[in-house]
Length: 428
Image 1 (tube, rainbow, N blue to C red):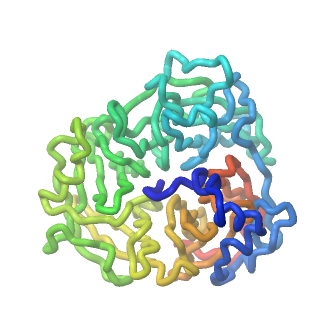
Image 2 (image 1 turned 135 degrees about the vertical axis):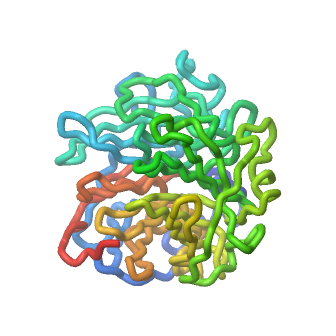
Image 3 (image 1 turned 45 degrees about the vertical axis):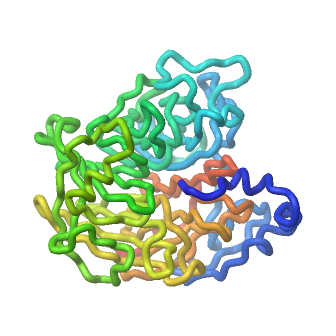
């Protein structure tokens, strides 16, 4: 999800950097804690994996390299993730893996295994895996590969048809969103949504009331998009559009102040599936606004929340609220970082059943899972105590009793449980 040195490359560096990393992680990347919020301050994890507030515990559900039940192995670099209700008292996690074609060592295939016939591109190591959990205990029941042969599956989002997995890559034949059914107990044929555009996709979410999809683009000069079906009953036939600000052509949203909603409109993208990476150029030619690295996105009661990872006064993140209204609506900043100690490059986001937003950081000095209260206060909920790796894939079980999160470079998927549903949780 970044343009700078990949974390796994950083950890291989020699010299002084390598010597520094022999120190305890907490001394290498020191950041001040934020507001404790209603859950209380973080307590250091004796195992050195994930710091949490008192009363909360985590379970490691799976590790990269673990055998899955279909004969493949869990790939590395777990990223965006969504949770679905499943049959027979289960919940189902669908999980992206942000791997490139050269990442064979952390791909899904063991020695001697080749790509399945259903793989979109046999040379590609990205894709989607499925974890089936007991809905009462959140213990793992099974796991399998669902989507194979895609590149850099970053974030994605929920839809009425399953998980939307997004490629943050525009190599030949790549740069698309794929639909992955939560019921797939084996590798499924790839269902590519060319109408959602070909660009550096980050995340997507669908409003089930309208079948309109909202899509982010991970570039410093990105735009923000929606796919509007001509008929909700035919959800993949329609128009790709980009957000523009009424009266402000090519508005740069990175300098917006808090709490000042702007009226928006949508402009059509004439060629959503171009040969070259030109979708955002088409959008800006029609006056579309600029979002500084659009990343995580989620939806609640028809309202869309999205991250601009390098927007805001500190260049360390903004959270926008989009309130659709017909072919327009409003866009405003509901939170931004004034210091990397407060919030450092929010990436994947989700909304809790009680209304608070949870934001996984992808910064450079250690990463937290931060919360955002309904009145705009940022608080700590978890900290990667093991490494400088980003946290990703944050989502809740349908009943709100568990939070799921990935530690990307550590190759871990965790379930966090505790007193989430105690009285006093305000609703958005």
